[in-house]
Length: 196
Length: 375
Image (cartoon, rainbow over all chains, first blue to last red; front, side):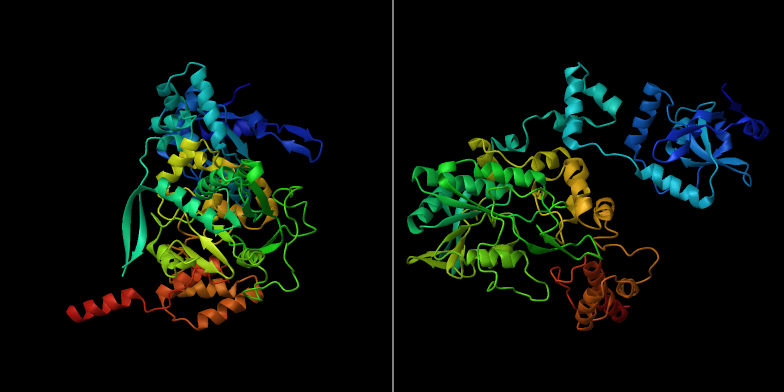
């Protein structure tokens, strides 16, 4: 059942219905799964936290928008409910909420998964969400781009879908490597030290 | 007067002539290689000449253990290029390295015995596993720091007499100081004065590529179809300026920058490195920003470099090293200009004083005085 939250009161009544769902880890026992109880919330009820050190560059924001359009809103915003502010305060997914806001896609609702965290837990959670992620190995990234070109995707489509500029696509396409760049370079003129 | 003069030849023709000269004059020729592009080109030039003359030369690699996997791969490729003309001298022996990424673990003993499970790579069967000189009488430059990288080089070179050690040092495009240091004392090779070398004990260090530019090196590597380290292609793909591409060690005072991109270049090497030495994660995340490691910007919770320096000293984790810093700083001026440099030494754990501190009056004080008088 999908739960919509338009007002604060709706959230308080929905809250009592929410039953925590757990999965079992062979090594660590019960683990909570908040994403199962995701709510669809009016963006006006959500505020940013004041401590998030993560920054996302403009080109990565465009990529995030493209990802949401292509794949749907697959990852809910993670938030806690703050009784003082009567708002959801974001723990993870600030940039997803910006993309859902008036400057970008201007959604009527956005998905929110709710944690029950103290301030210290929230700070730690934000850092965990931001940092526990991978980087792309440069040569594998290049392999993916060459595979997409092999599948018939144009360079322009690649820049749009993967959020990288044409220059980078060209670099990645170059199978030849750096030495190839200098094949037409002239050798310098030799010099020597003379004592006279 | 000593002047610099063009010869009318290309650097390639000149380098081949120099190579021919070296093979005429020296019986023992040893090329130092690192896996980098310059020593790759140099080794190839020497091997072509050796092959023509059916002679054998040494390819020498002092393995610091904490290197890119690609560097080790490159050395292995070079050593298998002209099998009948190469004596392989790949040293995988214990010596001390400075670890600038950690405050609690200031030195790394590479290839430390008993730690083979932690080594970045296993030793190869056919490399040299024990110092080929008498370790009882080996020389150490600085006893308090122990047997280091340069000690290993010196003691190794002392195993030879009258040999030519070829090094891929280039003057073109490098700092003028570096070149002045090289040409200051020309060497006498069987009556001929050679300006591209220095005498080292019984032996000679010679720089046949001294007038090459980076594009000459790449052109040569391309034309001859010589394999080169993959790191250069990755740095190129990441958009590094051509002149800043380096395949350096991963932990000395200036190398922390190369750790920033390591997870993208060699994820496996990065994982091994994290298990091998302390402080890698911090260096990876903050290495490129000027705040922490480069000490360009004062952290926001400090009001002066002097207070930041005193804080770093007070909280220093290693008592022995702290003493070295305290004594050294006591001999230096106490102003903001000097304190910033001292902070850099503390952050990079440079107890060896490799990034030396310019202990002079703050240049800004002079400017302030000037305006005080004028206004």
